[in-house]
Amino acid sequence: MSDSTNTEAATAPNSGAKKKNFLVRIISNNSKWLMIAPPLYYMVFLFLIPFLLALKISFADSILAVPPFTAIYEYKDDHLLLNLSLLNFQALGHDVVTYKNELIYNFGNLVGWIGGLFSSAPAVVTEVVAPEPSQYLSAFVESLRLATIATIVCLLIGYPVAYAIARAPKSRQNIYIMLVILPFWTSFLLRVYALQGVLRDSGLLNQLLIFMGFIDEPIHILQTSLAVQIGIAYSYAPFMVLPLYATLQKLDPALLEAASDLGSRPFRAFLDVTLPLSMPGVIAGSMLTFIPAMGEYIIPDMLGGPGVQTIGRVLWDTFFNDRDWPMAAAVSIAFLLFLVVPIGIYQYYSIREREA
Amino acid sequence: MSKFLRKFDFLQVILILSLALLYIPIIVMVVGSFNASQLANHWTGFTLEWFVKLFNDRRVLEAALLSVEIAFLASTISVILGTLIGISLVRVPRFFGRLLLTTMITAPLVMPDVITGLCQALLFNQTRVLFGWPTQGGFVTILLAHITFTMAYAAVTIQSRMLTVDRSLEDAAMDLGAGPVRAFVEITLPIIAPALFSSWLLGLTLSLDDVVIASFVTGPGATTLPMTIYSKVKLGVSPDMNALATIILAIVGAGVIISNIIMVRAEKQRQLDESKAMAEAH
Image 1 (cartoon, chains in turn green, purple):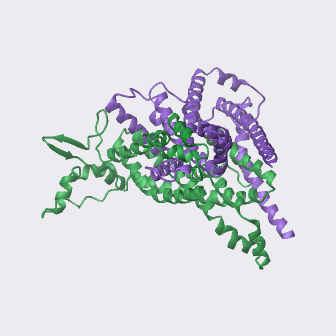
Image 2: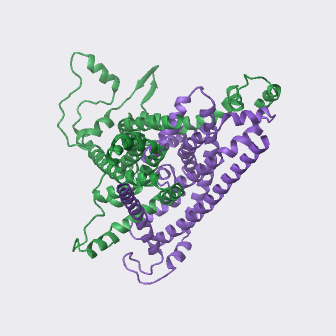
Image 3: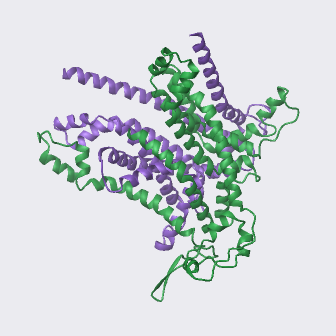
């Protein structure tokens, strides 16, 4: 900082029209790195490198040691030996126990595997007894189902709510938004716990339904995937409402008036004007709900019971209970590869929104 | 017009109903914290027993203290680093790693906690193998992991606010002879201050809320408040957790009201100052 102050002192007064903005000047000389480097390196070391590590470890094999995985490369006799194991990724698709037992050829050595591709005799035995789909695959499908339904529910509730807030008088908008955000400031865990209380057999919802005469016996909602869907929709609704409100609130009411002047009925005007213009909010909100919902651990664990296995829970159990770090890393990497598309869409819209 | 009004009412009804749905479970929980019955479904009388029980629980108090320490440090550091990112991204059009930085501050916002947690756990394990540090997970590892994602939120918030800062105001200050540091402190900082404050609060909340990432990177002996809550509520009804929720709600409610008043006042003062300055200039 003192460096830039000196250059500043030398050039500051009346240095002409070409003078750059001071913040630009501070950062565009060599000392700009004083500013950019700390957060950049922090993120590289604590965000980027951990992912590369997970990628690396996903190619290792699980062993009983510290650390609990094999080295993927070693330097022996002047040769660099790569031990890239694809076992974890294969286990993603098939039942891991069956598969590991049935595996005749060791895929473990990628070099040998690639060599096998080029040799005349097929080194890869492709015929393996068709195993059951793995717990990872079924958990993934379950997560996809739960997250999709919850996102649609969030959107169906969130859109009218955001629309109502955006159309409310200015003074009341802030109060409504505050009311939407307020639960978010309290503990997420305790909100899920609160929901648990409402959904249980003797909870408020069942009492209400019995009181109103819809049912005679309490219905079991807790410990089912329905409870998880309700839980995700309940916890993530603010994430849907806020981006939707942000886009809807920017909408020029004159556009709707114009549509109406040109003979559009209100609903038609909504479909033709409001909805298309609010698409960035719809996409941002949906992604903000869908992506974390896919990997959610707490909600399925607290509301779903043992029957609802999601990818987040399986990953957690693989790491903490099985202590199979390479498998957990492989699950993460495969999961991330799947999430690249929605995350990319979200990034595209949010960066464009911020820098527009 | 009547049609418009009817549509408006319909929306209003959905809004009120949704807000009610949002708050009913919370209200039930708060009521439960004063209910003498263990079971949440019957009101048997008013009691403060659960609050007394909570305050006598050393495990909860220690965990709360640890969590508050981590949250304060994590949010403060992330606001400082986030400000640097926000200014860099807005005022420097090109620098090495710009796209990487933009990506790295947006990705944690949507990254599932389990993946972030796992990756951080692998990182600290790797540094333990390579450098013998950290000997075991705990305060520092949770703090470092929390800074990573709270910084992302801070950076995004501050970046959006920086975009609204009129560059000519900074230039004008400089033309009037202010040094860059002074111009930043007196012009830029007050304008972005609300963003700094709200991202600090957000960081505080996110850190106080996290159970997954902390579970991945912690070691023996360091248990945060959410981890304690989680181990308790997993087992079912736990009235002292209702009491804790009531306390948290009271603190948050008071905090939101106070900060709102402060922010509204600050904004009014700023507008007043601006118009005064304008009047004097003319």
